[in-house]
Length: 76
Image 1: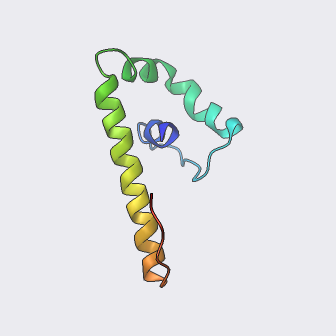
Image 2: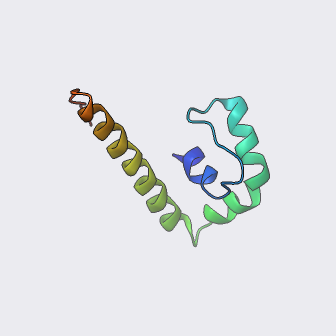
Image 3: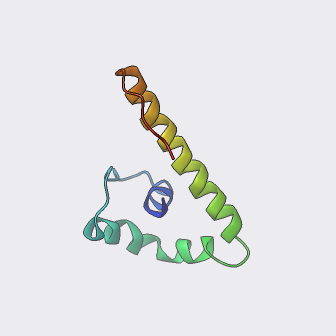
């Protein structure tokens, strides 16, 4: 969720669909100051809510894609 949220801050470069520790470094490093601000005491709740919203949208998209293929995904 963190990588997806951070990746959305700067769409000038394509972001990987699946993250590894190696690819996450390239996403995190240039945005570290912004991440520190987003996780600050004053903004943490809003940042967390946005991350959850992004994650839920991704899960909904995943489920819809599979339903179109006749697969009923189990979501927990």
